[in-house]
Image (cartoon, rainbow, N blue to C red; front, side, top):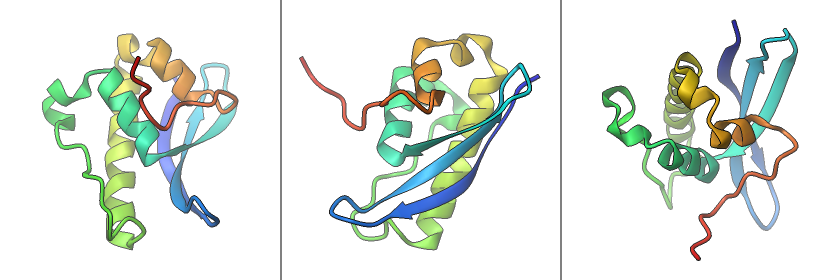
Length: 117
């Protein structure tokens, strides 16, 4: 059985300062993998999988302009993302969804914005 956890957080500096959350998971073959994703990427996956309809995941963390890097905000997001990934892992339809597969692939450039056609 695969396991998954959002356990690591890193803040990147530069012109595009942001926080990334490390998703550590053990694949079915036993290989340990880590993928780094941003808040906006979790939101895109959340919306793509229609997770807002679930009672246990209805309160996606709000985007914050002023407290993005505070310990409280980062901890709240990390906790929610960890719960979100555990729910996805428990439901094969969600775990095998193309969006989830791409999200977990450390080599796939998962979008940070929704591109409207």
